[in-house]
Length: 557
Ligand code: ISL
Ligand code: CA
Image (tube, rainbow, N blue to C red):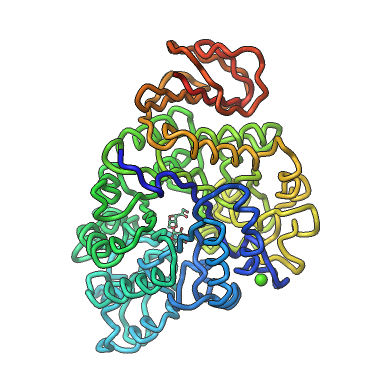
């Protein structure tokens, strides 16, 4: 397999609003990030992915951009951003910027113009349609954030499309001028020295011709089939690749909800005519029932095995995976897939091992490296996320559903679980701010914080440091071929990686009870590369008893 630096890298995602506040206004900022670069360098990560820091009215915390070439005032200045970039580069780290080009903010100058009149030169930058004769929206699609995907604009009496909030109008990618503006903007950032892009919902940019309603006949319905992996998406990405990406040695990852492994093999094809890799969502859906994200059901290990194996094998020799268990849109991984009570440390380390030993580029989300957990706020008002508020309004305020039941679903799935401030130390507000934080700090900050982790040689932090270091020492961790083993085991997820004569055996106990793993491996030498427990004398790799959430990785030669 072809060697690439972005395959050998580990990425760390920063959610700027919640990382570190330098000036006491309660909002994380660029200077705050720069003050923590030594911390990130010590962890050993190679690339920082910054969630959006561009000018934005913050309807969706920066994913609604009003100027792609300016920095949000709350986060600082362009000079602060340049200092951050220089600070990263001087430590040998790289910077990946978020690229949000499926939509802009409705306060972007293009949209301000576009809505003025039907013959405005910017009209066709967005997706405008007249309503139906009966006064209904142009079609029955719902937005990701509840309600119709259309908003009527009084100025011209037409509707515009917004797959996300009504302050996030969708750009019209069919318009060549729109694409050119985006490519020019990307080139401008690349020429400032950035090292790559994470592309927000990039597989939604091409909509099916005619924007048809779904066949269900429902007044509002999920229209994903008409805009996920749409008819011209590969054409657009190949054009972007030719005109921009191929001219730089960068890392690119496309966020692609609803993409199959076949789609991914095209987006992340090994000829590299589109992107380096994509984010899949399939493993993020295993705890959702037929009603979608908020229809919470317990996840099953069998489903996790099926989905992860499908992606590992599905891209083998064809593309490249990205590996993640949480981000700013998802609950905390230790609360979701591990045990955030008595086995918090053990299970966080197990999950990290499980992920980092697979084939693909691992992504760490801020706070994951210290085992931060989900949060339970009493009142709906304590939440900030518009997805949560829109859903609550639709279900409880308007729909009459039970308040407590909906709150329970927020405790499990709400995006704000990931957005509470980074917990740096045991001082008020976890050392995140000297002021009042924009969203409350998780009350467990006195026990769980970076200062505590740095003082404890057995911490999750140092365990992650070791995982990252192992990746640099063993090609097999990056390039080895994946195979699931002990497929039917109900408690253990085990797999091997193979490269030349070497084999890696990764065994993970996903539960709090002891579990036995039986293998049939012949080898001259088995080296324990990493484990989250002290060795216990039971080192026969063909018959091992794993303690609660125990994980072990052996190199067999
Ligand atoms: O968060 C989700 C599940 O609740 C997803 O549906 C998410 O909205 C989707 O993956 C797109 O996410 C990205 O684009 C959104 C933004 O709100 C997210 O933060 C971003 O990651 C719109 O820009
Ligand atoms: Ca600040």
